[in-house]
Image (cartoon, rainbow, N blue to C red; front, side, top):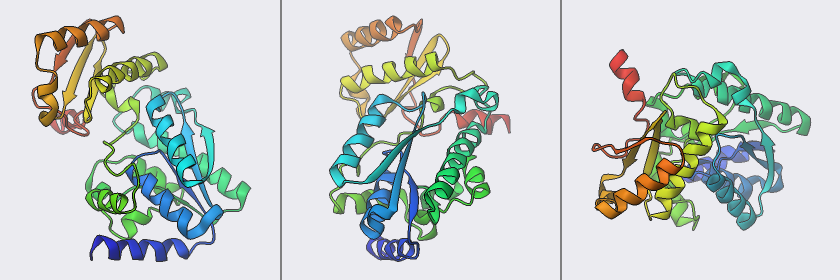
Length: 271
Protein backbone atom coordinates (compact mmCIF):
# COMPACT_ATOMS: atom_id res chain seq x y z
CA UNK A 1 0.00 0.00 0.00
CA UNK A 2 1.04 3.59 -0.51
CA UNK A 3 1.59 5.83 2.52
CA UNK A 4 -1.69 7.59 1.77
CA UNK A 5 -3.55 4.29 1.72
CA UNK A 6 -1.99 3.38 5.06
CA UNK A 7 -3.03 6.76 6.38
CA UNK A 8 -6.59 5.96 5.33
CA UNK A 9 -6.41 2.69 7.25
CA UNK A 10 -5.09 4.58 10.28
CA UNK A 11 -8.01 7.02 10.17
CA UNK A 12 -10.41 4.07 10.00
CA UNK A 13 -8.69 2.32 12.90
CA UNK A 14 -8.76 5.40 15.13
CA UNK A 15 -12.39 5.92 14.20
CA UNK A 16 -13.26 2.57 15.74
CA UNK A 17 -12.62 4.08 19.18
CA UNK A 18 -14.82 6.73 20.74
CA UNK A 19 -11.96 8.14 22.84
CA UNK A 20 -8.25 7.63 23.45
CA UNK A 21 -5.16 8.68 25.31
CA UNK A 22 -2.14 9.30 23.07
CA UNK A 23 1.30 9.09 24.70
CA UNK A 24 2.93 12.18 23.21
CA UNK A 25 6.66 12.93 23.39
CA UNK A 26 6.86 15.62 20.70
CA UNK A 27 8.85 13.44 18.29
CA UNK A 28 8.00 12.58 14.68
CA UNK A 29 5.95 9.46 15.45
CA UNK A 30 3.79 10.58 18.34
CA UNK A 31 3.27 14.05 16.82
CA UNK A 32 1.79 12.55 13.66
CA UNK A 33 -0.37 10.15 15.68
CA UNK A 34 -1.60 12.93 17.97
CA UNK A 35 -2.39 15.10 14.95
CA UNK A 36 -4.45 12.38 13.23
CA UNK A 37 -6.16 11.31 16.47
CA UNK A 38 -7.16 14.93 17.09
CA UNK A 39 -8.61 15.17 13.58
CA UNK A 40 -10.57 11.94 13.99
CA UNK A 41 -11.70 12.13 17.62
CA UNK A 42 -11.45 15.83 18.39
CA UNK A 43 -11.33 16.62 22.10
CA UNK A 44 -12.03 12.94 22.87
CA UNK A 45 -8.39 12.34 21.99
CA UNK A 46 -6.55 13.12 25.22
CA UNK A 47 -2.90 13.89 24.41
CA UNK A 48 -0.61 13.24 27.39
CA UNK A 49 3.07 14.14 27.80
CA UNK A 50 5.20 12.71 30.60
CA UNK A 51 7.86 14.98 32.09
CA UNK A 52 10.85 13.72 34.08
CA UNK A 53 14.57 14.55 34.39
CA UNK A 54 15.25 12.38 31.32
CA UNK A 55 13.23 14.76 29.10
CA UNK A 56 15.17 17.73 27.75
CA UNK A 57 14.00 21.34 27.83
CA UNK A 58 14.21 21.37 24.03
CA UNK A 59 11.74 18.49 23.87
CA UNK A 60 9.37 20.28 26.26
CA UNK A 61 9.48 23.34 23.99
CA UNK A 62 8.64 21.20 20.93
CA UNK A 63 5.66 19.70 22.76
CA UNK A 64 4.36 23.10 23.84
CA UNK A 65 4.67 24.53 20.32
CA UNK A 66 2.87 21.58 18.71
CA UNK A 67 0.05 21.59 21.26
CA UNK A 68 -0.54 25.31 20.81
CA UNK A 69 -0.34 25.11 17.03
CA UNK A 70 -2.99 22.40 16.68
CA UNK A 71 -5.14 23.08 19.73
CA UNK A 72 -4.73 19.61 21.21
CA UNK A 73 -6.57 18.48 24.34
CA UNK A 74 -3.30 18.12 26.19
CA UNK A 75 -2.17 17.19 29.70
CA UNK A 76 1.27 17.02 31.34
CA UNK A 77 2.04 14.39 33.93
CA UNK A 78 5.21 13.77 35.92
CA UNK A 79 6.77 10.32 36.04
CA UNK A 80 9.27 9.12 38.63
CA UNK A 81 11.24 6.37 36.94
CA UNK A 82 14.51 7.59 38.53
CA UNK A 83 13.08 6.69 41.94
CA UNK A 84 13.02 3.05 40.82
CA UNK A 85 16.46 1.42 41.45
CA UNK A 86 15.75 -1.01 38.61
CA UNK A 87 15.77 1.98 36.26
CA UNK A 88 18.49 4.07 37.91
CA UNK A 89 20.97 1.17 37.83
CA UNK A 90 20.65 1.39 34.02
CA UNK A 91 20.35 -2.27 32.98
CA UNK A 92 20.01 -3.21 29.32
CA UNK A 93 16.22 -3.33 29.75
CA UNK A 94 16.08 0.11 31.38
CA UNK A 95 13.37 1.21 28.94
CA UNK A 96 11.05 -1.47 30.28
CA UNK A 97 10.96 0.19 33.70
CA UNK A 98 10.47 3.64 32.19
CA UNK A 99 7.59 2.52 29.98
CA UNK A 100 6.05 0.51 32.82
CA UNK A 101 5.93 3.68 34.90
CA UNK A 102 4.45 5.67 32.00
CA UNK A 103 1.85 3.13 30.89
CA UNK A 104 0.73 2.41 34.44
CA UNK A 105 0.10 6.14 34.90
CA UNK A 106 -1.77 6.31 31.59
CA UNK A 107 -3.85 3.28 32.56
CA UNK A 108 -4.89 5.10 35.74
CA UNK A 109 -5.86 8.14 33.68
CA UNK A 110 -7.79 5.96 31.23
CA UNK A 111 -9.91 4.64 34.11
CA UNK A 112 -10.25 8.07 35.73
CA UNK A 113 -11.29 9.76 32.48
CA UNK A 114 -13.35 6.80 31.24
CA UNK A 115 -11.32 6.63 28.04
CA UNK A 116 -11.50 3.58 25.78
CA UNK A 117 -7.86 2.96 24.82
CA UNK A 118 -4.24 4.10 25.24
CA UNK A 119 -2.17 4.59 22.07
CA UNK A 120 1.59 4.88 21.68
CA UNK A 121 3.55 6.06 18.66
CA UNK A 122 5.65 2.97 17.92
CA UNK A 123 6.02 2.52 14.16
CA UNK A 124 6.52 -0.51 11.90
CA UNK A 125 10.33 -0.17 11.97
CA UNK A 126 10.31 -0.68 15.74
CA UNK A 127 9.06 -4.25 15.45
CA UNK A 128 12.45 -5.78 14.62
CA UNK A 129 14.50 -3.47 16.87
CA UNK A 130 15.56 -4.03 20.49
CA UNK A 131 12.69 -2.35 22.33
CA UNK A 132 12.25 -3.51 25.94
CA UNK A 133 9.45 -0.96 26.31
CA UNK A 134 7.23 -3.02 24.02
CA UNK A 135 6.87 -5.63 26.77
CA UNK A 136 5.51 -2.94 29.09
CA UNK A 137 3.09 -1.85 26.37
CA UNK A 138 1.79 -5.39 25.98
CA UNK A 139 1.38 -5.80 29.74
CA UNK A 140 -0.73 -2.63 29.96
CA UNK A 141 -2.69 -3.40 26.77
CA UNK A 142 -1.39 -0.30 24.98
CA UNK A 143 -2.31 -0.22 21.27
CA UNK A 144 0.27 0.79 18.63
CA UNK A 145 -1.87 1.90 15.66
CA UNK A 146 1.08 2.88 13.45
CA UNK A 147 2.37 -0.69 13.73
CA UNK A 148 -1.08 -2.14 13.11
CA UNK A 149 -1.38 -0.34 9.77
CA UNK A 150 2.29 -0.85 8.87
CA UNK A 151 3.51 2.77 8.69
CA UNK A 152 7.32 3.03 8.69
CA UNK A 153 9.48 5.91 9.90
CA UNK A 154 10.18 7.11 6.36
CA UNK A 155 6.46 7.05 5.59
CA UNK A 156 5.72 8.96 8.78
CA UNK A 157 8.09 11.68 7.68
CA UNK A 158 6.48 11.79 4.23
CA UNK A 159 2.94 11.93 5.61
CA UNK A 160 3.93 14.53 8.21
CA UNK A 161 5.54 16.69 5.52
CA UNK A 162 2.43 16.41 3.32
CA UNK A 163 0.30 17.49 6.28
CA UNK A 164 2.57 20.49 6.93
CA UNK A 165 3.66 19.28 10.36
CA UNK A 166 6.80 21.07 11.59
CA UNK A 167 8.02 17.79 13.11
CA UNK A 168 8.46 15.92 9.81
CA UNK A 169 12.26 16.29 9.68
CA UNK A 170 13.06 16.20 13.40
CA UNK A 171 15.96 13.94 14.36
CA UNK A 172 15.15 11.00 16.62
CA UNK A 173 14.77 12.10 20.25
CA UNK A 174 15.23 9.20 22.67
CA UNK A 175 15.39 10.14 26.34
CA UNK A 176 18.58 11.57 27.80
CA UNK A 177 19.25 8.35 29.73
CA UNK A 178 20.02 6.68 26.40
CA UNK A 179 23.32 8.62 26.32
CA UNK A 180 24.66 6.62 29.28
CA UNK A 181 26.16 3.14 28.68
CA UNK A 182 24.29 0.31 30.33
CA UNK A 183 25.50 -0.22 33.89
CA UNK A 184 26.38 3.46 34.43
CA UNK A 185 24.02 4.81 37.10
CA UNK A 186 21.45 7.31 35.86
CA UNK A 187 21.34 10.49 37.97
CA UNK A 188 19.74 13.88 37.50
CA UNK A 189 23.20 15.50 37.51
CA UNK A 190 24.45 13.33 34.64
CA UNK A 191 21.29 13.94 32.61
CA UNK A 192 21.62 17.70 33.00
CA UNK A 193 25.30 17.49 32.03
CA UNK A 194 24.43 15.62 28.83
CA UNK A 195 21.59 18.01 28.03
CA UNK A 196 23.85 21.06 28.35
CA UNK A 197 26.59 19.40 26.29
CA UNK A 198 24.16 18.63 23.47
CA UNK A 199 22.89 22.20 23.56
CA UNK A 200 26.47 23.34 22.85
CA UNK A 201 26.52 21.27 19.65
CA UNK A 202 23.02 22.37 18.69
CA UNK A 203 24.07 26.03 18.92
CA UNK A 204 26.83 25.22 16.44
CA UNK A 205 24.21 24.26 13.87
CA UNK A 206 24.45 20.48 14.17
CA UNK A 207 21.25 18.53 13.52
CA UNK A 208 21.86 14.81 14.03
CA UNK A 209 24.23 13.91 16.85
CA UNK A 210 24.58 12.46 20.34
CA UNK A 211 26.82 13.19 23.31
CA UNK A 212 27.55 9.77 24.82
CA UNK A 213 28.39 10.08 28.50
CA UNK A 214 31.27 7.86 29.67
CA UNK A 215 31.72 9.47 33.10
CA UNK A 216 34.75 11.82 32.62
CA UNK A 217 34.71 11.29 28.84
CA UNK A 218 32.23 12.85 26.38
CA UNK A 219 32.13 10.88 23.11
CA UNK A 220 30.55 12.91 20.31
CA UNK A 221 28.67 11.01 17.63
CA UNK A 222 28.00 13.37 14.70
CA UNK A 223 26.27 12.52 11.43
CA UNK A 224 29.07 12.04 8.91
CA UNK A 225 27.54 14.54 6.48
CA UNK A 226 27.78 17.15 9.25
CA UNK A 227 31.27 16.37 10.54
CA UNK A 228 32.86 19.03 8.35
CA UNK A 229 31.16 21.68 10.49
CA UNK A 230 33.39 20.85 13.45
CA UNK A 231 36.66 19.84 11.77
CA UNK A 232 38.78 22.84 12.60
CA UNK A 233 41.14 23.57 15.48
CA UNK A 234 39.14 26.62 16.54
CA UNK A 235 35.93 24.60 16.78
CA UNK A 236 37.78 21.79 18.60
CA UNK A 237 38.98 24.33 21.16
CA UNK A 238 35.52 25.81 21.58
CA UNK A 239 33.85 22.44 22.09
CA UNK A 240 36.53 21.29 24.54
CA UNK A 241 36.34 24.48 26.57
CA UNK A 242 32.54 24.39 26.85
CA UNK A 243 32.27 20.69 27.65
CA UNK A 244 35.11 20.79 30.16
CA UNK A 245 33.32 23.67 31.85
CA UNK A 246 30.40 21.25 32.27
CA UNK A 247 32.62 18.76 34.10
CA UNK A 248 34.03 16.50 31.38
CA UNK A 249 37.78 15.90 31.50
CA UNK A 250 38.11 14.44 28.01
CA UNK A 251 36.24 15.09 24.76
CA UNK A 252 36.49 12.85 21.72
CA UNK A 253 34.78 12.53 18.33
CA UNK A 254 33.65 9.05 17.28
CA UNK A 255 34.97 8.49 13.75
CA UNK A 256 32.10 6.14 12.93
CA UNK A 257 29.72 9.05 13.29
CA UNK A 258 26.16 9.06 14.59
CA UNK A 259 24.45 5.67 15.02
CA UNK A 260 21.03 5.41 16.60
CA UNK A 261 21.23 2.98 19.51
CA UNK A 262 25.00 2.65 19.25
CA UNK A 263 25.28 1.63 22.90
CA UNK A 264 23.41 -1.55 21.98
CA UNK A 265 26.56 -2.59 20.05
CA UNK A 266 28.08 -3.56 23.41
CA UNK A 267 25.17 -5.92 24.05
CA UNK A 268 25.79 -7.60 20.69
CA UNK A 269 29.49 -8.01 21.48
CA UNK A 270 28.65 -9.60 24.84
CA UNK A 271 26.22 -11.98 23.14
